[in-house]
Length: 253
Image (cartoon, rainbow, N blue to C red; front, top):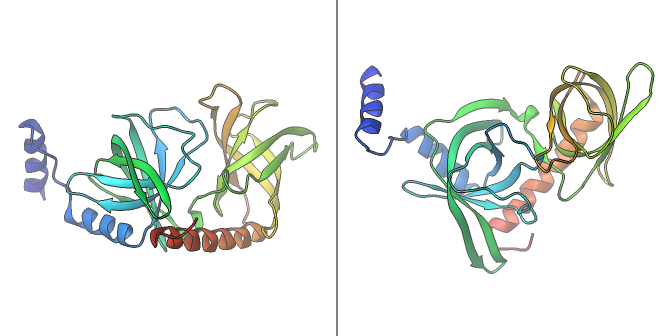
């Protein structure tokens, strides 16, 4: 093991490409074969509230090809930008850090597809079980959430849910009083049919200004499990899985 680490560092010093563990490549190839959903999260302290949803299109010798889901080109990644990728598996989520190499595009039966070519992560870490997997909902559902003080019931802000899991959710708040980290709030979320809305008490675990400069993006942790949310997530997972299977076969979105 020490010899492997020493060779890895030596390769970097002499200008050789960093070796990628074959186990990592195996996981990536399997994810590409199954058209797994991948969330792309820009690093570096900026957050515009729009993590990109993509599919792992293919694994090349020195790069991954990420095909973006339709409608998510509102956030452009730049060459050399470092991002975190979260591969959504059937039972777990695995994360790694990569660097953007260049934009990618391809034309097929379903029209022009766009995405990015990124470096292969040196390692992948299992960070979430299926129950805490985040699902993006901002583009196709645009669910709303009303935020109130849990004690007085006073209205604080309205927001839009960006993504959610059984553990919590991420919300964009365009106007209103800024929320503070560790603040306790009560939320009521509304989804379009057939998805159920839900309500619950949350703690603000992340709060920052949206990259656009307007409004705030907050990460909320639910203090107790919410059954209505679990049911909505089950329907969303089924919808996403069916949608990406159609796209992988060249069908319509």
